[in-house]
Structures are given as C-alpha cells and as structure tokens.
Length: 184
Image (tube, rainbow, N blue to C red; front, side, top):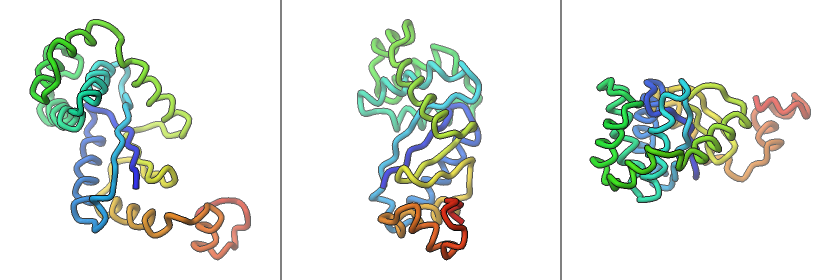
C-alpha cells in the first residue's frame, strides 16, 4: 500500500496529521506494509520553498525522514524560522545531510522543480489545503484527522484493494445511485 502525503513543513495541521498517521500505522496490523511518499506543499508561499528543497536534497541522500521530522518539530513546536538559511543548514547537518551540498542548493534553485511538480500535482488532484493524503492513488483524506480516522481509511483501502470504482459504489449504496459515481 502506498500513501502519498502533501504536507507543509511549517504547518501545525500537517504535523498533527503526521503524528496521527504514525500512531495509526503503529497500531494497524498491516502498518509495516505501507510505503509513505511525501510531497511538498506550501501553505504560505514562499515560506517553506527552501526547506522543501533541502528535504529533496536529503531524500537523495536517504535522510529525508530524519530531516522532515527535525524540521516539523523546529518550525511547528519551537517556532524556528523556515526561511532562515542558518536554521535550514543546522537542521540538515543534524539529519546527516552534507553541509556543502546544503549550502550550495540554498544559493541556487536546485530541487525547485521537484517542489513545483509536487504542487502542480496537488492542483491537478484538486485539493487546496494541507495536509492531504491519498491512499493507493484512490482514496483521499484531507485535513488533520484523529488516528482512528486514518486507521479506518487504511483498513477500507486494504479491504477494497481490487475493487473498481463501480464495484465500490455498488457495494456501499447497492447501486441505487446509478452511474453518478457518488461513492456513497
């Protein structure tokens, strides 16, 4: 199972969703079968643009999860500035990202394309706020939710993994809605 998450690094709701999803995955019997793919989303442009670019650099070094955790805590709970290059450099180093590489990208637009692609994808999906989770490229869950909501969504996706949208609609409402695709 794949979960795509669009989240901002300096956004309380994104941080709360991350914590609740981690809790749900820790409790769910199939939690170890889930791959999480994080995507950049800026609630306030360009507040976290550079931070998202540094996370993309960290991903190339296999350190994105560590850096994302450090950044979210620093920006959300400790109110450190996500626009301060010195803060971004310090956090990158703490996460094990090369200092020279971090300084280099903070001086140019490297990895900017990655951030813009993530945001363009979010616009195509049609949501306008973070966080937003998409489970198995089928089921969307918006906003921060309690871990129980994520647990239910994960279980539903797991139980209906092979169903088409038409079958899903028929199984939920008995097909009474015809072909409207209401999904209810």
